[in-house]
Length: 453
Image 1: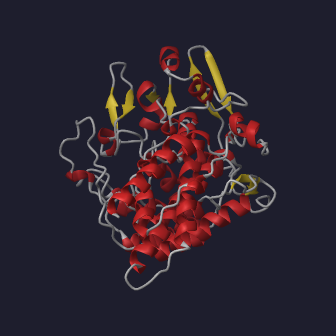
Image 2 (image 1 turned 30 degrees about the horizontal axis):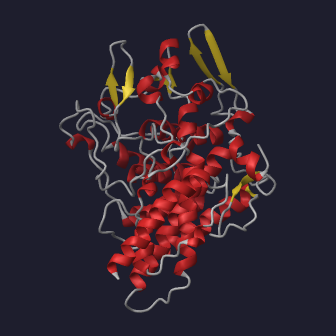
Image 3 (image 1 turned 30 degrees about the vertical axis):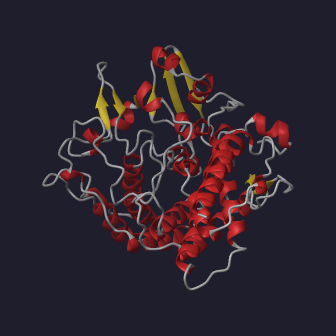
């Protein structure tokens, strides 16, 4: 029996890797041809390597955290990357075959595995002996599907605006494992509401602790929910979700305790402040081929430990990024992000002192001991300025800057025109430009005929 289970799950994983990853939503796959039969089978499916991969590689490439000389720009391997860097209109994502290079395919591969698990789990009887595993698997599947829905809508849809969200195009909400499901784009409203409801259900079913640090827990699900609600401008609910995440995991790593600051990778993926392991799909080469924007780098003062932990000096007196938790760029939630969400929501809700309390809780672990002077502000607006500044510095290379630009551009206090100089060429991206919404890859629209942006 054990051998049979291994064979079944191995076939499933090979199928997902070579089939669904290559052609999902391009050529439909009959995933139901292979049927896992036990809770253990479903658990193994959710431990597939593909779930280490996250999204938003393209938006990281396009964001304003990097600068290039003409030589560095030409060193970017893919023409697609160069188009993203200069904000070319109607850029088309290349149809990469390896799943780890293709954020659209990788997202829907994970979504489809989760749909298989959820569909099959519903046919299995929950009892006293298996209820803990049953609930945990249910929560994990909902978490991973929601995470990929969020990545996709952040990349391929307009920013959430309550006044237009019911008519704005979201992304295809693939909720069934069958090949006969009609593929169409849900609205932005439907997309976000599905993410929120599924993450709430996920958090109810996940355990407080997991045996393996790479597995998501209640804290991780609440943190992703808080990220989602922040990007909906739902500050009250985002605050509640972030508070729940912090209650389940309040550990924050003190960067003062990292002794080997000159190491090539001084940060540790097994840090307890990380909620789940997540590496960026279609990794941006900007942090190492290009250089960190001098404007951004100047925001880190000399008492900020992130200045030496995140960045590596180069011979041209510029810096590249080295603060990886993984071999690839890290995109998951952390206690640091949760504290920043709490700080921002409190400031936006008019609670300046509480906002600064959360901000200083993070900063005490990021700045040199005995040199850091706690942040103070006279108004909620001043507090928000400080928080957004720290947010950009803390979450650099996490694939979140593009979405932050989209939301902040709607506020006249923060909107900006991005400018990038490469040799004698100057490229601009005005605030609220349509190019902030990426076109759906043509290899998808050509096959499924779904609406293009």
